[in-house]
Length: 116
Length: 112
Image (spheres, rainbow over the protein chains, first blue to last red):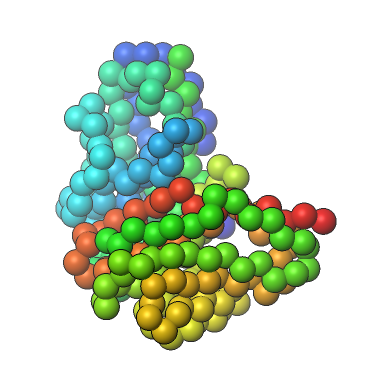
């Protein structure tokens, strides 16, 4: 158990819909990262928040958005869903930004999104 | 971040050492080598990281060649639960932003 909690574990929805994935980082961790893993793309970095502020953006679509709240939990919002958005979405947390030279990210078990 | 090259797949007998190689010939002097693994569809798990010296923890050992162009992750006594995809990642934590960039990794299969 990494200490990172993601909900829901599984989600099935239809094209065009909107969903919200939630992540609770480990106690005391200020950084939250979101990754997407689909069958043909591997693990793709989406976005990183540190203490409520966006720190880095990866291959995140404009239809997707994220935020980190004062209690440090984070939400990833996916809208106008397409079939290709079906994937595992992982959240990871760390104590400090990766720039603090730890390199150790703790990943949750993921949210499996299926778009029909 | 430097590019890494890993074999697509490897097999290992249970109880034997698993040696997973990684080439990072373009690594620069301040880039670290990190290893993560992902057991089927679970979240990736940090294993170990190092800069120049060999490192060991309760999970594995990391051997980095003197020229730092390659490294080997060693699982000393592989078990069936070590079957996973192993990712070798090279990066400079201070300057490459705050992301880990995962490649294709090596699928390690531990056989009974």
